[in-house]
Image 1 (cartoon, rainbow, N blue to C red):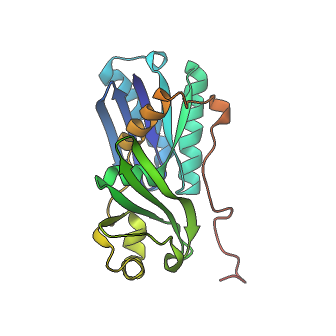
Image 2: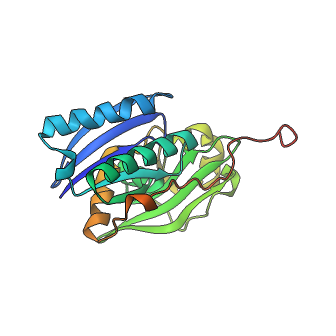
Length: 223
């Protein structure tokens, strides 16, 4: 199975090619340059692999949550490439990709959502893959989902932005905190390949970002 994966949900812009389990990757801290970096990265990887886009089995993208602009760019690029090559797409949750990137078995994944909030999800690794214990949500760091037991790993830049609060929230249950872990296209590719194998690919027209929050900034009166 040959899968192209892209992620632009955070300041890290990344592209990966999953080639029957082997991986080719391009990534760069992009700031606001995702739109100018993604397609050249895609073309570089395809050229390195000696593949045409139509030789792929599908395209996976980081559907969110994350930066609104980044999610729109990633989804739009995935759709455009998929339409042109008549390929299915698969949206992969960036919080699940964070869990995968951590290498841990029990994960509290948090991304900084700004405005004093975090995007969060709770996951546990099983023999059959990841089990979602708490679906992706949005809350203040003081109100993130509770977890049962110990040996949890906290990961993502939500722990960088609100580390003191989150460490207190999960006191006695965290074995490790990894605030510098990002979702990468490599994890999007691996998780997307699993979705395609289960027949969960969809038509490009059905692809959509997972925003969770419905507005980007607070009004003056709310601030």
